[in-house]
Image 1 (cartoon, rainbow, N blue to C red):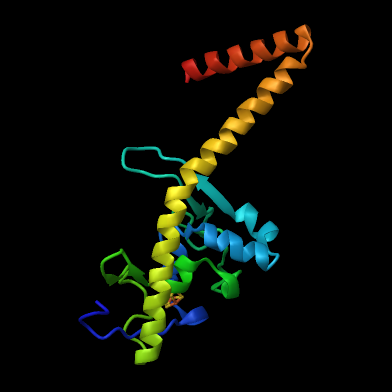
Image 2: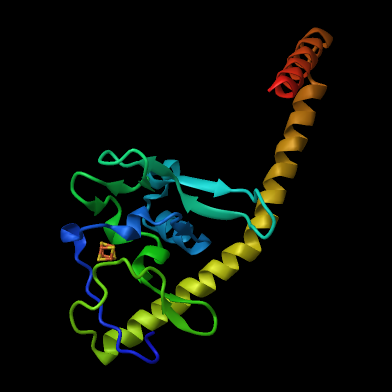
Length: 197
Ligand code: SF4
């Protein structure tokens, strides 16, 4: 793509016909995004729209993504929870995740490519040499952050889980025998219900 063919791109913003940047299957979030949102003092507003995806199949990795919501115009399809359908815009446009800022240009550690050819901004406008250099640098930054996040997340997740287990064990130690019995009954019922399903 960008190395061989000329990369012309201009985001159509609220005039975009399909907003594939917001409706693509997953909007990746990096630890760098979390840091920027913390510094900008907006993390608490965005937190509810974030999710941790734990691996469900082989080859999957733990990742942070934005939550999804069904589109009002087509409930069979979903979009990023931060997409505002009525205004056809992103609710955090000026501090959106790095994967959205670099979209549709992406870097995979070896080459640059267009991650979604459905984006109507591709082929629009003129991209100057300087703008292309900036776009490539941002795509490289996104790649570095994505790799760093993928490496760090399993350890962070493991530590949080271990801490939660430790806290529950501590809490159980302080429970009365009656409450412990109630809890055991509840857990047994849950197991039985799961078996029946
Ligand atoms: S990045 Fe592409 S899909 Fe997203 S609003 Fe801009 S033109 Fe539309």
